[in-house]
Length: 424
Image 1: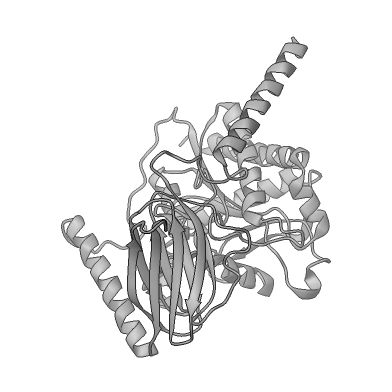
Image 2: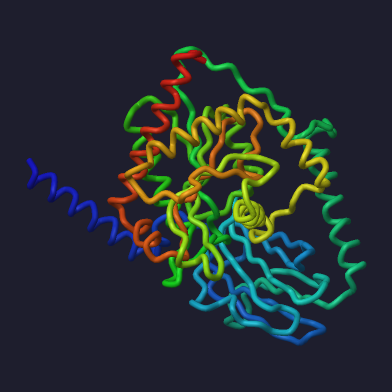
């Protein structure tokens, strides 16, 4: 039996490898395989000067696209539907005219996103798909011209207002409801607990990158899948992930996924980096919970860095003042915060002896991804991409399995304590 099972595993592995070679599938955690109607972005290039710059993307067939600008920092956001990226290695690092570089990757729910980082305020003078002609393939051509900050902001505001009006029309009017107003469904006594696992970053946002080029988004995705499998195997939980491929999901949407599914627990998984002298001296896991006051300066800086993920991915941030943001945090239910802290402590107990834990194992800060007022939420920093020993651990499938098992055990303990007090 063992021999037959081994042969079956070998055959399955060979088939997967063959399909990957034939279909050019991305690495683990990457985009889905090509569909017949997908266009392929084969190349991209820049031309022009500091007054007018052209960005060209070479496609295999015409596609739909949308384009807009964002400020602070100045960026041009290009969203393409039904496209797979197959750009030559190194594309995006070149600088030309008004563009100092560009990034690209999957962003849900748009498809593929290209972000042009520009040196100054710009206007999109022209943007169109040129058809195939004279032996040349279809191309997306974007013409940028230099402008003033005032004109840039006026154009950006007009764009945002038109999009808001379109959304109100689609919804039949503006409800005026504040975020987080949706009530949570009452679960039946026998319903399985819902766990949402949130692999950090993804797609256009790689997160922290190790010295050898390993990306945080890939490391945490591999761990999240291991944790998902451990939890599902028990049969006690309904387990969901905020992303199932290598795509970026906006922070607000990650929170909304947990709330929409009436999650009983939200676990965000990260493996960040530390600057300067801390890079090679600080290692180990940390568990964070939400608080408007950070536990220390490092926690505050880390939360600020993680909260900038939407900026990196070209997501429009809600136009809310810091006062409104603070009010939303204050409205978070006290019981939810206490449950989050309770799970964090249980998690640290379970991780003890299974992996290295930092001296101050539990910390707190204003992470946007933890702000659901009715879903107990924690953020696990598995380690740091700047520390060689942490990177070694993160790369190990045996370590991931062991630590995922410890997290799953903590989930069991957390719910067994809650069930003892209250079955709901």
